[in-house]
Image (cartoon, rainbow, N blue to C red):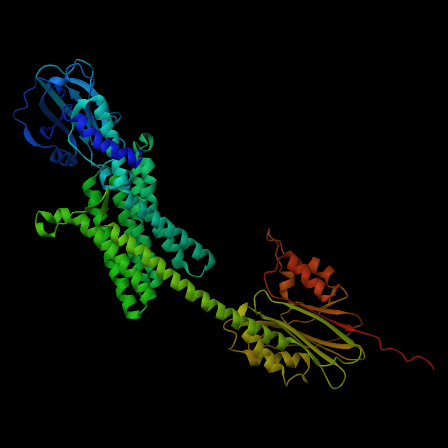
Length: 636
């Protein structure tokens, strides 16, 4: 691309040197059909319609073959010069003839007519071909309605500065045809910067989503911005690649991606307006269908059908945008309302501009120019709502992110307080009965967890122990733990089985569809031990699992019964939650019962650390009860 200073120099230098050397051909004879004889210089085209060149190129969108002919007066200073003819972007396939001889070609006729993205071209005229007082120019053109001008490829600037064909000095014509797309790209910089701004907004949205995964609207906003800015910027290098643009999938894919932004705008709004969530998502599905049909029509080179479904797509999106704005207005969500309003404005302005040319014939005063000059640039009025949407969206996202961070900080403080309270509830400050030692460790998977344990020394010198696990994690499980520990406060005189039955009745209807596993044991000073189990992992004695009859977990059935198992134990008894055995490493392998059995002979902290190193997925609780021999008095 030519640098801006060079463009300015060329703009000032070319007119002075080219006024005598360039002949512009504004009006042409036009005829539909195809006949090789129409290329001949002496062909009589007086019966053909005469129309301006710009109207001629628009008529080409009707599709099929058209021939264009013109006769020019040859200036005297053309004699002996190296001449060329300059053609502006004329899609899709065409041949250029001067005095019946072919001098230029664009696209391919076989196996079917198909051309790359149209661009400014200069075709050299063989020496001696233009002589005499007049020259006859003919263009054979085929257009199937691919309509590249309607796509996002305009960002390349290659179709800007349309002009009638020109004949003159080869150096001047080639310089002009290089200048037109380069200057067009400079004129289009505001649009390109708008696309870059959308990509910047997409990057910010994805970053916010990576920080706050619960807010899926950040992700869909990022996709929306990516589909708005990405296809247009990708189209800039695509427009200069004949190999890509000559294949139908190139422009069709870029077109489809740019049209899918309507669907993602509705998905994004469905998160901002949950009241009409499913209505908006139905609209998104319709937009996807319309986009696919429009892309298929483009691939089949049916411009009329493509335009029909493209307009239906835009109108569908605008209607559902209105639904979202209404829902947000009712819900008084001001930030979301601002985003939806700007998005609606964006869609509405785009569709109004697209429809203005069609309405001009019926209501001329409705039409307004799409492009407005601003120094060396051209401002497309559709860029104004685009930029407004991006800035408002980024500002509102910043406010939402700030509020979310403040809310998360408050939640973190509450969770920290809840964890301290849970640690106080689990802590046992009572003095252990003589002959017993307890080693306990609790490692929640989150700030607070659903595991619990309690050791209660009783008046008869025995020790009551209970360890359990609430299904689920987090604050809900921790609240249920508080209920259980509160229910235990004045009921520790019961036997293990009757205590589990009491807790089962206490938690019925409070588990929210979950359940609680628990194992209870009462250790007597003489070595006698009574155990009862409610679906918990059986305790281990010196690395071997104890056989304890197990009943249903708590909270499942009010009629559940539990049985006391009495035995005599002499050694360390280890109670564990399932967070130990279900620890999972990176490859998904569980710690398992075999490895856990070997660990149960170690101190509680070593067992918990081993499970955490393996891969903690759940709360981990380990409690060991050990009998210690009483010290004999030393003889005097």
